[in-house]
Length: 292
Length: 292
Image (cartoon, rainbow over all chains, first blue to last red; front, top):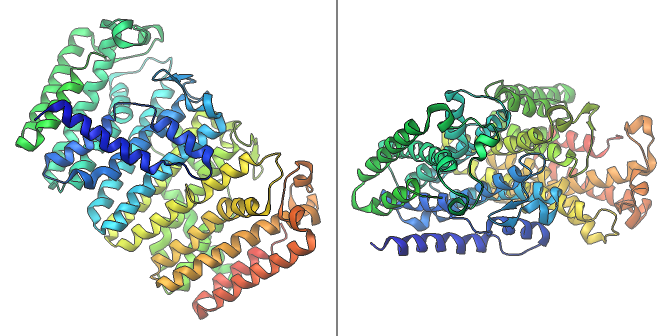
């Protein structure tokens, strides 16, 4: 398997379908704002994970494609709303002005709302077209892990924890939900659509947990071990913001070790799925070994 | 049938179930913000329409109850976001401080996002529990009419039309989508869950269109014919805001006449459903004949 070629293919499938969903129509300004943010680049981490999990259990990736795009829309809506002045007040993302800087705050709120609603519309369209309850199960899992039991509550607790010293339990809650929510959603929904058994779905939930937490610990480690040039953003930002991180709570050595245990655990669990999971294994490996 | 008793029952069913869905849990502040707005009162117009439509086609209202609550959450999320400083900048709604005045702007954005996501989670939970594709069809219709083909696009065009003279086509687009979107969603989803035929679903879509537009024309009429004391808000506000309305575009006489034609048409279509639709007929009658 040519890993890079496979990765490019999955990203291209996602991008082409996203472009189709977000083709210009009335009211144009709304679609411009939605596609500006969705098509602003990004690694398509969640779609790639979903397509790979579907593939790893022997499913047809095309079946998961609408859900992969829907999940990317959910991810993007959360970025648009997080960047708002009332939240993180960020003017730039991936080197481009944020949605509200280009389209105004009101339209940014509506573009986020639009992407979230559209994501569910796309998933429900698929459920109705396929007339197969497994798609509803996948959509339900995504709703659960995007909202009141996932990304959204992680973000709420993260916002509430600003400038406050938090304990390990709260930090793990934030990481597992804010970052882990959509990573688990990607893997589990992909596995469900691919026809996974209950046991396999449970495995993917654990893999998602490991990857989500490892991903965040890596972020915390890089903030104190990397450089501006490699990361493309300031280092020691957590320290400057008095932010409790895995490193401040556990020390750099423990962080490195726990990170290694979690990521190796994820890769080991993926190996259980045999040859069809080769891409996912390499992708998980790449994710956790990233240097920026 | 004791109309008032029936109405109270439907509202009570909705309120009790909403309270159950929004019972306090971690993170408490989010659930406080969500339930503050959902339980702030309101006529439960959309839930009552949904339950009545379900009943009118011979369905069991209990089956539609989760969807009725979900729709009320979608309606409430839109109010929370519309009230934000970046949008209408309203400090009060129904005599109470708006969500962002009480919980801050960031939390108001998140509470709205939370309600929208939770609404879909509740609907998808029902689809999965019932294992019946008709629930997915109802959820799909709601997604469609809340988002990129309904309420949201109506709101976008309304925001874009501020201070601009618009033509009749644009005004009807705003009314049919912004107000009509969720009214159609309520009636059609209720009918689908109640087991309506394709033809009956088409009827409810038309009834929803008529009620939605009539409701808005009534708003425009009351703004120039009522008084502060009756309406509980300033009259002639559209004129002051230079807002194009059905009355400014067509004149008061035509507005009255078209309003009568639309509302009588809705009631006539409801009559087709016979005795089981008696409540819905009276409710539609009450809605279109309201004086405030």
